[in-house]
Length: 203
Image (cartoon, rainbow, N blue to C red):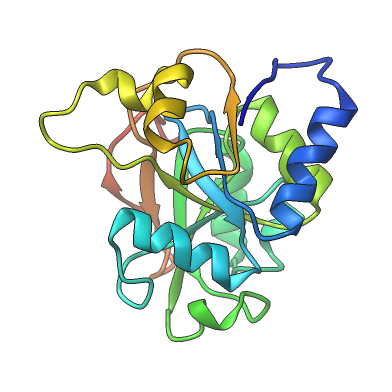
């Protein structure tokens, strides 16, 4: 199902329907400040497993990332020291994935993992949904095959054509980007950029 949303003044009915799908273990595709992504309620294991199968990744080995709606929300699901907190406060919301030690509130699919990626995209649609859900959203970029047209991960109608059978709701937030987030590893206390993407870190 394709649902058109805007940066502001969206129908509460549409937003509530999306939140309900997430609460019931559904999967959504949505715009972020970098690329379109696919996600689910991060505290529900079954939809996480569905997404991992779709992307052909092993959740025990592959890094998993979650979207949180504010910094205090992040501290419930990841461990943040003072210097990392200040760094994140300077740069979020923004096009970054911060790699942090996992907290205890994440489900057991994360339990054997020492780290979790944290996103707070600078995009009003997904941030509003995350806030209404009052829980983190597992997030990963849409898969694309090597020779495939980039429009299948940037154009909502083509995303719907390709992934409509996999996702319960696809949010049309306009044409998406093609540049990924900047990944910042904060596992050792000092920030290290391990992939330069769209975000430019203010240190």
